[in-house]
Length: 359
Image 1: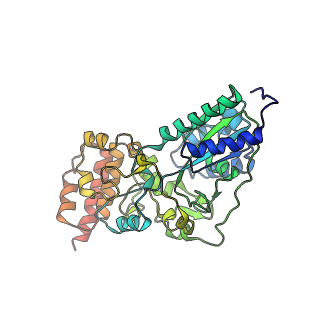
Image 2: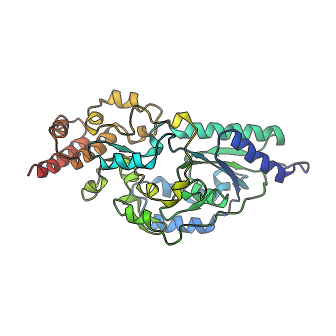
């Protein structure tokens, strides 16, 4: 953009934040594009192979840490966060589901509408509003849809610090929120980065079911339940299956124990409300879904990302971990000849687990 000398960018930045609030964002901040230290951290993580089968993370090269390579002309990043924890629920309800081995636990972010389009549309509206003030300018909106170090940018924009579990934490709002970015060529004033406030707390490290948080700020995706049940399309390693419990899509344990989430703010977005009773569905009921039922009941939801076979793989593991009942065993036997080799393998394992519980 050929910035007009008539634009007061400090005033514009304040208006951008106000417009963001009007659009429903919980907070908007502005960051620069220097990410050298974070780039080094990412490179070390990739070199250690901790990204598992997410090969795309290596393919993008330096674009992830150099915004101007992804969107030429970028000098600032407008970072926004949007709360998603369902209104009318609480963390105790989540713990109750986790303790009930006959029910499926689905990560709280995935219970309602897929957030990608919703946030991107709002970022587009924000850009259009900015354009009415500045005239045409360079920008591009992202929501977990491109190689971006979004957590580092959110920290630099003052939205929160990166906690020991590697998620962003806001001291006034916890961590139950989505992030989105607007890359721009507007030379806006940047916000002060958020300072860290995890202190000596290690609750997230201690609670992780699979010990995926190998140390403060260190996550091994290959052991992370979110990776195993969502990103990975491979068989789940047998030694990790018993540790997954009844978590069939993602995991929230590290957020559920975080002391800062006592300040978490429930979402006002009706689209994020739990659908189809999936905040406490019976495992045997989910395992009886046909592919058409899966596609119908997860339409427009993040759960689609796992795919039908992947989701059934996850439910089979949870059934293997469930208390032994005739219903559980019957449900598993009904899929012993499943068309998917992936599902069949996990059914065999689950039935063996159930057999050992028979005494």
